[in-house]
Image (cartoon, rainbow, N blue to C red; front, side):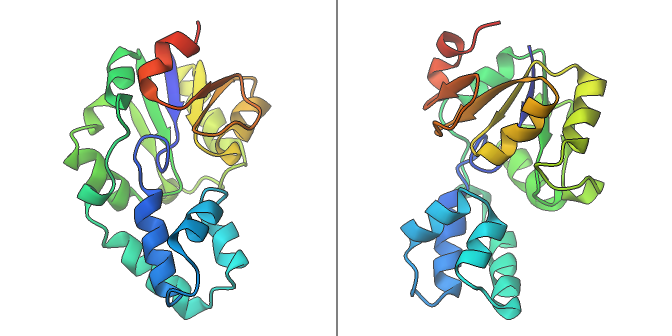
Amino acid sequence: MNILWDYDGTLFNTYPAYAKRMSQVLGGQVSEEDCYTELKISASHAISKFQMTPPQIEEYNDLISAISPEEMPPFDHVEEVLKQADCNVIMTHKDQVGAYKVLDYYDFTKYFSEIITADHGFPRKPDPASYKYLHDKHHIDLAIGDRELDIIPAKQLGMYTCLFQNNKPADFHLEDYKDFFKVVFF
């Protein structure tokens, strides 16, 4: 099976660290839980929702880039799925340095045939251009993400979709990767 993965909130549990930094930038006026909820829709959504100013956005981005990999662990059992797949690729809005910092720290880079980041110049999701590129090159069977935004391009291209810890419409749903081979059938 060839799998296209989202990064934040799908492979790595990054949102608690992001929410903590956003709440900090907002002076504690917005709880970490509220930041988390809005970030799970998208970072741009949360920034708009909380009416963050350009200096706040810059501070937030600086804090995000300084987060240590220890605060962004892989989800339990995800490595077992990565090992079983024939081909894994990533499409993330994260910058290349930030993505590789965490992937290398957990020795996950070896599991991926290709990693597309914000630095590759593709339009942001839900535009399907990056997914089409990866699908044409690697013949993707399944796209996994934690947000509806992550699977919209896959649906447009006729791929099977799986949402992780999200019950929006998708072909498959997972709460824990230990159940991957019980839930996803090919």
